[in-house]
Length: 201
Ligand code: 5GP
Image (tube, rainbow, N blue to C red; front, side, top):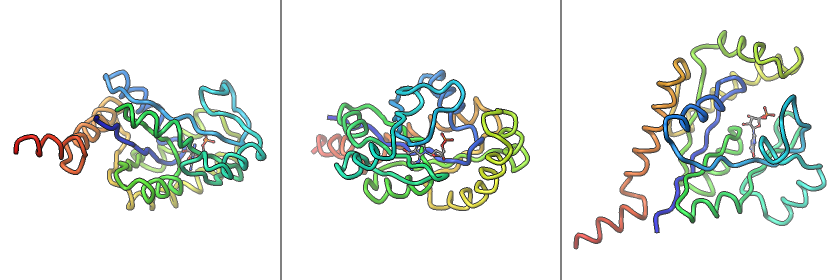
């Protein structure tokens, strides 16, 4: 049975992760996007169960205690975490799973599941990042400054990822994202490909 590929996508706020995933879907890529749990409050039009599962600190701590999270990290004073069951169930069904998580969480996933593919996305330059953060209008001035300040530190961690994507032209960047996944499916280290090789003997 073919297992799905676990794809971890990170990048600073405003790099365009959501936009690239939506465009990749439009271009025909099929994947299950993991919905994280978080203790932070919903922003703007965010809906529970669609953007995040919004939980209390107590609920998330309980999930951590019960080993229900593949990884969990404190980001901007809030806890964010990935459901272990969602990831495992989809991978076992042969469905590729995308996690849109921060760099600390990504590296924890890689240490637990080395076959995970880590992709880091950056905007064209820092000015573009800043105008995207201001332009989307979902954070106040102080939050924009905090996220922008953190961005440079985050980008330095891209060196530990498998791939770097530059989000200049959306269609091209999404196509490159799809190309990475298609190449990853062909790795000889994937169980399904080992079986194909063995079947020739
Ligand atoms: P935001 O509050 O803007 O939705 O997300 C803040 C940061 O938390 C982003 O860098 C996002 O990728 C990260 N994040 C979202 N979900 C998770 C998760 O489940 N685990 C980790 N480690 N980070 C997450």
